[in-house]
Length: 92
Image 1: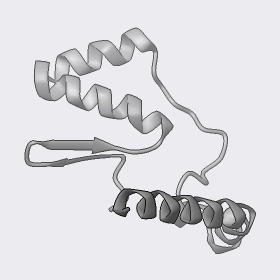
Image 2: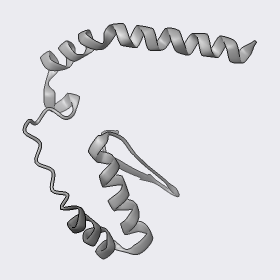
Image 3: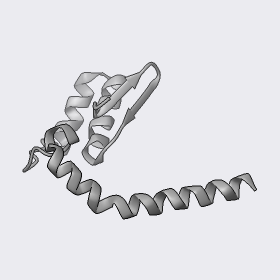
Image 4: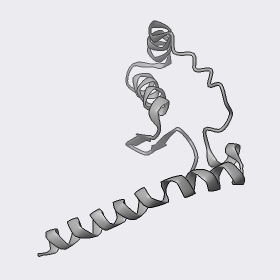
């Protein structure tokens, strides 16, 4: 699922930096009505205009995605190793 804010019954989740703002606006609309969400957005003057259209793997394309994956591969390995160490400690 690639939505920035997902509502599944009573659970509302969001991912990404500006998706956190989207999440908050959506939650305000759920709790206080759409007009409140719109008011808050205006107060924040939140009108994102990203300079590039590469904010998702689908938009970025396979070449750019591969280069990012290559750049962060060592971090992914380190993260997995740290996770396995933490798991071992929790299971001990």
